[in-house]
Length: 377
Image (cartoon, rainbow, N blue to C red):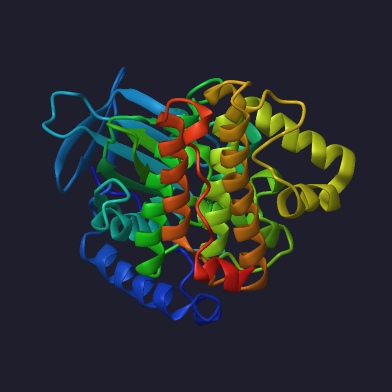
């Protein structure tokens, strides 16, 4: 079976000048790699199972993990020593950007070396997307969309399966001790990521996988490309909404927002954000994100009081005060995008854990601010 011709993803000089030097060099290397193995993309469809042939062997794609307009994710059979994920994506609508699969593979592989993302194994060369591919792989597109997207570039990548669930998969609120553990893991992972010069680009509940003892892995680095055309303002940081370039502080704000979401109940929290946007517009949403304690929503059950008991006023006040300090950190990042106190955040979360484990309100003590705290405030 001859492989279909490669789709001409943009590589002209005008396009290359629009991307930063790091992406430019990676893209050049990727194109050379693609050209070395132009025939390594052989999707073959049978009545029940699709088998994908590639350098690591043959996988039967018989279980769909997720599907959307842009991507379909399969899990390969469990008889493999290490279960794998195979993710197919096209670039329809993103012709003038680097293919989303390449961003996911490049940045995801770097993040995996830091221990904060699944291990990446393979990224395919491109090939022309046919109308039949939309049916065979199960992309969520209309027939009209399929006609429009014929001729776009189809790629796939292979990565390890993380034995866990995303924060978006669980219903209702998370108990506060669990929120704190997940929060600490997220900020430690972000410190590693950002120190290495990487950002996730679209951190949200769907892209944080928790497994084991609340160990966190980040997934879907391609969403940083897709986010460019997204209008989901409620998930964005204030600076994204203003149209500023995405930096490490946006990841950090989004991590705070994720904590606020899961401690109040993700579905209800998103509805609350959407209600603010609908009633107050972008200005109202910005006030909520920048000028209020977005961890504690007035009409929601207080997650702190629910955790320690409504009569335990000293602990409620102490923990609330620490949560409010995170809002001050957001204000600091608004003034200086590089002022991200990862260790301070983790220590604050650790203090809350300690207070939650103590018996009775009389033992609660709020730590005095550090010299750094006093200087910043």
